[in-house]
Length: 257
Image (cartoon, rainbow, N blue to C red; front, side, top):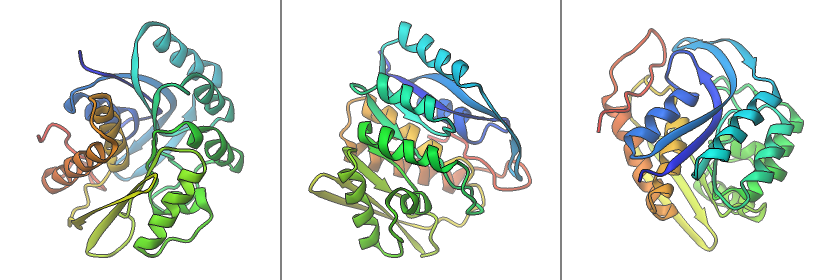
């Protein structure tokens, strides 16, 4: 049976990121996607026009409905804007593998969540995470360390492990170097994944796609290192081959396997 992956994240009306990207990524990787929607956004490849947060009780009701009936293999979290919801997740998934994609920073560099939510992610979610998958900016927020080198990425990963997670993948895609370096830290192990920067504007939803793919591959029984390696290769293939959709930063076309 396909592993059931529960994505707790926001909805993207253009289908490129958030819940929609999660469902596509989970499905093509061989999992079954269940969802709890935390926000409804009006957005497209040009940007976000509006965000409507789903009331806490409705987000929690969605999660409860799913876990009352389905056997969840892995939980993947994305856009979270409520301390109450974060605390509910932490209280109910301590024995389940949790992939935390800490959606905190917009492409523009603007911080999307309040300080109290950031604190709840640090103190409630990170300690129960099987793996945390921040980009450079998010890793800086979580650790308080400025990241400019690969050694900084390694150090940030070690700080996150000290905060309680089992692994941390510090993504390097937001830099400008011709070679992108993603750093995976697992206890006493450091794994470095390098790939050439792909010249494309179609990058919408890459973080969601990567985290969901990692969650699914963990559910399929792969090790954390193999789940990350496979998922990074998957996203790179999509970046190379996804066609232009929309007038801005286009999405990935997930079925290009």
